[in-house]
Length: 154
Image (cartoon, rainbow, N blue to C red):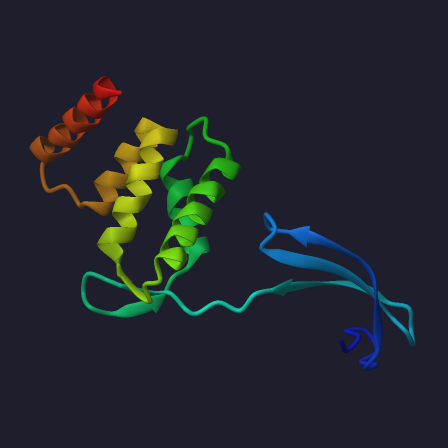
């Protein structure tokens, strides 16, 4: 590992510990020449997961982009950031374990809504209204009734 301070090609590991829910390893390193300390992360290289958008374009799955959408849907709601990060983690884990390389954005949106409904109903309705692009109030009311029926069924 090259030192970011002096560019010497020799460092030693001082400390290693799991990070990101055991999905990576965090290492504290020290340069053998200048004693500069820095942190590195080691992760398993994963195959790219491609999302096919409604217009047919493709882009790599971006958990951070999904998290931003969830944060926006949960604005001014009593939902902890960790719960939203967990939704993103579970969705990515589910997609990667399914073995698919490409997935439709509609399917990702449905997965998000299924998990978000259990976390916060208002955030679910907000996310659904943007995701499904409701054209009029009747469709919106139907969605609310479906949510109420689902809640009553539990």
